[in-house]
Amino acid sequence: MQPGSVHALVGPNGGGKSSLIKTLLGQMPHQGQLSLQWPGEPGTIGYVPQALEFDRGLPMTVDDFMAAMCQRRPAFLGLSKRYAGAIGEALERVGMQDKRKRRMGALSGGERQRVLLAQGLIPAPQLLVLDEPMSALDEAGIQVFERLLNDWRAAGITVLWIEHDLEAVGRLASRVTGLNRRVLFDATPQQALTPERLLTLFSTHPRSAA
Image (cartoon, rainbow, N blue to C red; front, side, top):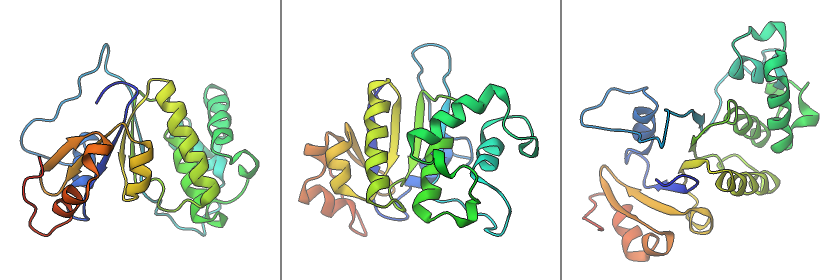
């Protein structure tokens, strides 16, 4: 992956996309070699999960959640001065600034996904890993996400993006890797998202699509 590129990872459920992400994040043992080559000092990896599992009855506001995820200071002590500005800016970028005092359990699925996008921005990452971030977003949220993708690209942030929406991948990705138990292709969207390659990718017993 080149710095500032948006690299999409596509394939069927069970094909290994989430396992690859967990391995990259150090959450799963593996065999073989997986390496990150940073241009200088090792950078920061941001991560946005597909969904947030929590007790929706908890009296946890958006600010509480951001404090718990983004700072070392205990969340019940409120936002630290060190992170308050960055948290406010991140929530502004995803359109959630006016809902900071709302309980997380009272938000819609799309609103919670926007908050997850915001926490992935703190601290500012050099590599951002997104696990189907569009799955719960409404149309307004999708527009926010697409604007963020363009911002990340312009800022030189590299994005690794798991996505099922192939139309969005075709419009927004710099490069696409097809994964179904093994890498079947790695190419530009125009080269990758052909009917022949997609048929092979989503078949039960994939053949080589290189």
